Length: 494
Image 1 (spheres, one colour):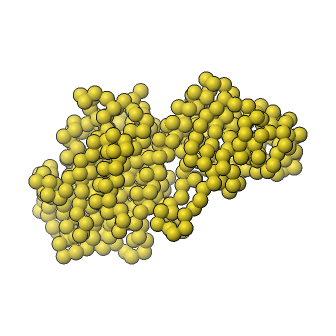
Image 2: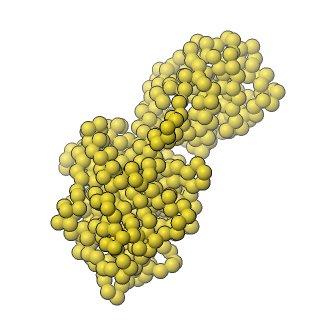
Image 3: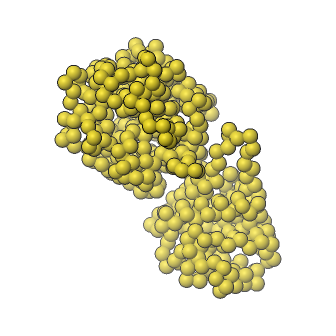
């Protein structure tokens, strides 16, 4: 969808639909009042009849309105006028707006931004969240269907009171479109099945970004990884016919001397658990085990489109984890790139095995901060459910930055403990470290494992096992945490 901003009179602006807000107390804003007068009181009549009560998430479409140049009038519930909208409510309004406009058949629409400002946030921020919500609701994955969905709505114009207000709103549109584009890429990659989205496919998608977004992309094959000593990562791919790839994407928006932010995303394009085979029910959802890697590609896309003055490196260790005669066996011991030996007690705890080598590789970039993103543990889903991602870090300042980025974007995280008390659970009598540590605190133990490879780094780990996709009949990748990561990087540019 194409978005634009104009300081235009809503009464004379030609469009397929004009959207304005109404409130729960029966009042309407100045823009809605002018529309109401021009249309002979159609808005106040609808409110008095109770056709719309102004609750957030409500809408009422009124077709063929005389007195304005739009062919349809859409009333949107905006809640209590006494309070500015919350971020959650703006997301609900944006989703309702997108879905209702799509069903209307209108090819274009104009939306008055009156009443759509988030409390204690700038207009630009509010518009960014609105655009993200609309694009998220409008998303359809039909690439593999014979019959494609045909979206009638092609363009949305945000109407502002003044040119200065329009300039501010345009900043929000630019950010919203870039972040939504990154989320869309991450969702597309996540929703593709494992027979299409292989490690080689992920690498090819990264290479496309080299041309379209001026990124430097390097892809290491198994031979080069073996020379680097990445025995932990390569042990996971041995059970697959698909060769592993280490994908490195470099965005340079600042001087080369400026230390980069490094994002490391788990790219397990399918995870059957290996010899420690997963249960059959819902195993199809293990195509989503590469959503951490997908979020790195999506974030790099957003950062590049915004042209941010910062250096960012994205690293995606990509592999499959399948049972085979050459696959890891419980009890096997492998040697990581860092030189630490690892006893593999459960082959389904493979994400940490590929991440530890990628984190060691990331050291060569001398990062200002490093964040890894992974659908790492079912234990995190049990602990936090599907709302926040689990955040682990021994650096309080970095953790607070990430938490704030989550709050600002609505893509929230919750900090979990990363205490040394847990480390003893990873002790092994045969190797430097075991890859699991018993039943209790599984998400913490996984983070503790990664902490062994990030000592002296400014590092954080995001466990997105509960937030990377939705389940059920309409299951889909969510594209999280692209919005959080992009907001974090934006904050580092200020």
